[in-house]
Length: 180
Image (cartoon, rainbow, N blue to C red):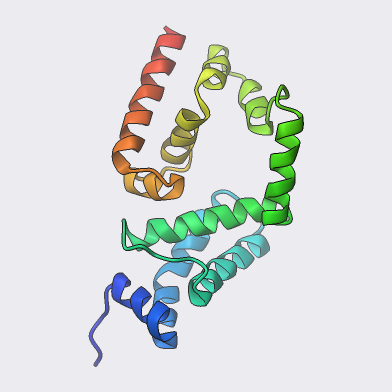
């Protein structure tokens, strides 16, 4: 009977030796969890399955590098959620570039997210949310809407956990003040 390896050991084996068994174990541990989390953002099971496959393919190919900061689940969630956004936007990196160029041309136009937030049917809440900085709104989305822990949100957003806590506190304070 073999000894159970930690997530970090599995990832090191995949990165250093292209260890197929380590990769399969990592996949068995996290693919169902990742698929369940992604289904919370996308109802299309086919798209979710493709994104899970692309996420693990990036791990196998080494294009996604784990720096041993934070937990593996949060790291995989960050890769998977970004890939899902790419798929939903279309064209992946090419689509991101096209959107960045479009934003530069139309700086005065509200983004789709800002229009949705402005359309919330809860009186002053919509206005209060729109007035939050994008950084504060992103933390609220990750922690409140997506239900991520502070650590998972930190990995997803690429910021330290302490910054997630500070931004969440600032966002709540600003919302309280705006709604008082």
